[in-house]
Amino acid sequence: MLEDDFPADIVKELNGELTEFSGKCYYDPEKRKIVFFDARDAEKAYIELEIRAMEKHKWIESEKFHRDLGDSSLRDWIKNYAENFSKFWRKTHEYILSEKREPAC
Image (cartoon, rainbow, N blue to C red):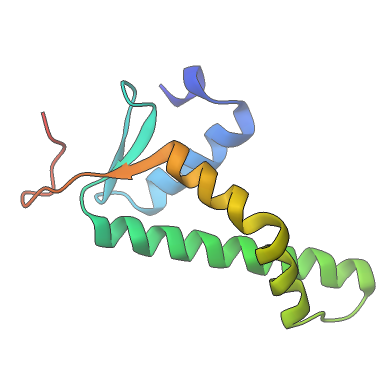
């Protein structure tokens, strides 16, 4: 169970992903990872979540300065957070090749 493997804030985030990408992935308690059924779905999810993280950062930083910071806040996210985002993703996600789109047994 996710609750046994991760802190509460991470559990909430990962449960959201499992709901959003339902049918494309599942949680494997043995691996302690979200497993996608194929690489394309995993890549699309990664990109979508990365873009959301960048947009959230842009919104928060723009609110602090009371103006739209535009691309500079996106560059800031890439410089300061992209590597950790990628490391976290690799630690908590993977994919399997499956033509039936079912978990490998």
